[in-house]
Image (tube, rainbow, N blue to C red):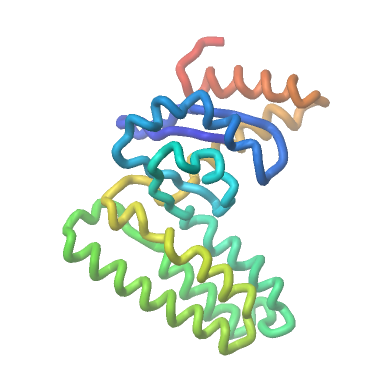
Length: 207
């Protein structure tokens, strides 16, 4: 699913595809490439799927923002992989999760450059300390996950752009699930049905 935020705050569905989780993005972006190339700053908010960028590589200048909603939830999975070292709801587990929720909590409407710089510096320092804590307690999967996400956590904030989560897309996916979960569909049939439903709800088409 590829959506665009409008100035009004609403969203527009710009692309839709059904396929494997990793892949298919080139075909999804292809109809929008000409329009995307007109942006001087194009902020792409993702859940961390790196194949999304493969669909735009070398064609559009992209600023990447990792969805801050996904970070704590995906970190839980990494901690599950580290369960031999840190048990769920143990003091160490609670310490890691409380810190990552604090790091990912960013208020909107901050526009003073000095404040932004200090805020990002503070959160990066806390993240560095959290990664070290994970390694000290044998949580290699969690530490690696956080290191991979680190570079793209504060892109929107440092560039004063709106969009730090994919929460609107998650709600949109709920609309999709409510439709698809009724009956049995072929891939083409499901895609066509979802296109009609989303065009009606989000793009202003009375279908």
